[in-house]
Image (cartoon, rainbow, N blue to C red; front, top):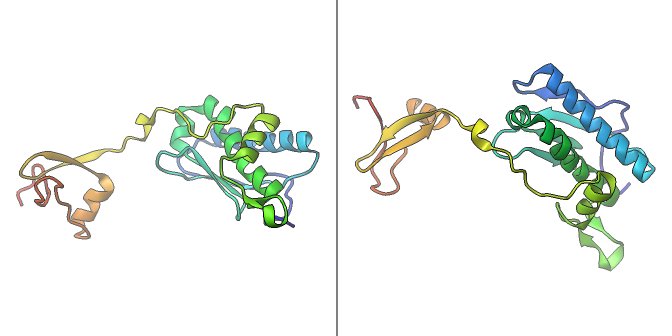
Length: 193
């Protein structure tokens, strides 16, 4: 077989959620399954269902892990953009798995084989021909929902905002941050150090 994936499963595997309402989780799983049903009807062959996780952080809306046959989604972006997420992000990530199932890491045979690019012609074709969507490589979601609280720090020349993660590293003595401009160590605003 030109691709590695788990044995065929009738239903998608359960999702692991990060602060995601169970109803939204079910909608996401149903949409993933609907994309595979659509692909199976269009391509005339079955595809195994991936494991689905809602544990991504950061700016990416989703990702497909090809070798382990998994889909990962960003719960914060999903909750804030439910309709567009289900309509665009889910098929985008499913398309990556379909391309891997159909072409593996390379297209063609023998010496003329070329590497399949993540958003290359095969992926674009799946987006257009299977899902009827314009292939777009990035989302345009408002990232303000991802804004994390910050803690004010200062140096000799300006005030800085440290993420909670960086602040906690300072508190635990695991890190010390310096200003890029004046090179002085940052001190927490209001601390008497």
